[in-house]
Amino acid sequence: MLLPPMATLDDRLLLTMRTRGHAPAIERFSIALGKTANNGAIWFAIGIVLAIVDSSNREAWLICAVLGPVAIGVNYLVKLAVRRPRPILDGLPPLGGAPSSLSFPSAHATSSFAVATAMARVEPVAAIAFVLAAALALGRPYLGMHYPSDVLAGALLGVALGLVVPLSL
Image (cartoon, rainbow, N blue to C red):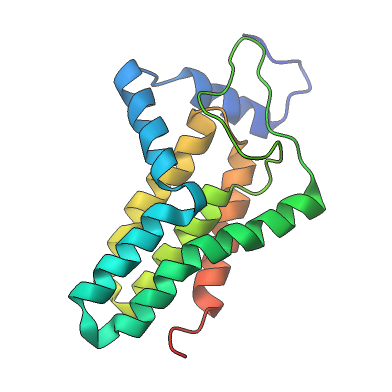
């Protein structure tokens, strides 16, 4: 697939991510992982489990659990303001569906980085959550669902949300 000569860096990165390193098993994994994060579900579940396991930080973990879905809502308000359509690559349809035709910023990246940031504030060892957040975020352009800049913007918005959310009531 050829890009027009005036293709942006974003377009070029998207095409690279959409055409390199693809194998059926990796694609299935990326699709399944992405589905677990729809509406912040995986982050909600992780937060609930941590609240049960670590009663000394229960309130903070519960706030982290709720932050994933809340971040999705904040993200959607930005999507409505920006109104960037999802990417279209001729001959390379996206490998997943989305509830909206709006792309910027990535809700998966926003919720993932918001919760990972907040979790790292609760317990520094929880910074391991950034590995999952990165995998979820990078899966979006890999699957053709978002431009790389959508993911970067979502990650930045998520980190900001994760830093400003109060971890106690």
